[in-house]
Length: 246
Ligand code: PXP
Image 1: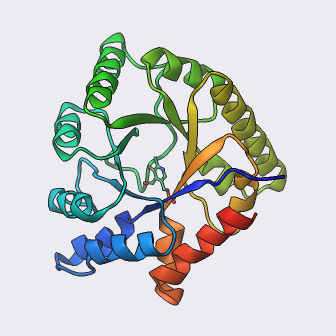
Image 2 (image 1 turned 90 degrees about the vertical axis):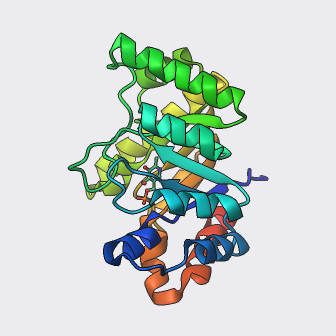
């Protein structure tokens, strides 16, 4: 059976973490983009956080200047929307953000948004679309959230795989996988493109690749962690071959 090629988005935030922690000009994000792309990344993902803990505004400009395809992850705020429209990434994934969190925890709660926030979401989606930026919403694998995503006018979602990836109990992991499978099928039936990401690594990725509706995966922390020992080129290549052969 032929298998759809899954696009691989490599998130380079944690290369920026090393740079930002010391305020050094190295390691070069521009070099990281080139190596990742030459090793099989279809797109480069960066998350410009409101607290600028890793990617800085100048990093975003630098990455945009060299990346073949750029996916900008950001919170749904006026400041970020202005930056997004100015930067013109190819894709923009809206994520929830809390200052005290270590990393993005869970998806956007679209169904629980105030009317005002939901209107702002719709306005942001419209503005991005008019500017040829493809918006997506990072949400939990939950049918209710997908229904609200559809209402918002978006044509693409990214399913949060963090709960699946973090489960240490095999039964719980299977249940989470089932939720992701059902959510992906439901979104696809409703003509919504499905991406996924968060917490994925070479050990937990195979099951996710079997969900046929998933068109794109965004992976960061584990690739950069692997690259400490085997180099970025080899780390990205290993993910690429798993996606292509599994
Ligand atoms: N997708 C989204 C929307 C994210 O916020 C993140 C983390 O920045 C990722 C994917 C990548 O997660 P990880 O770094 O755990 O691979």
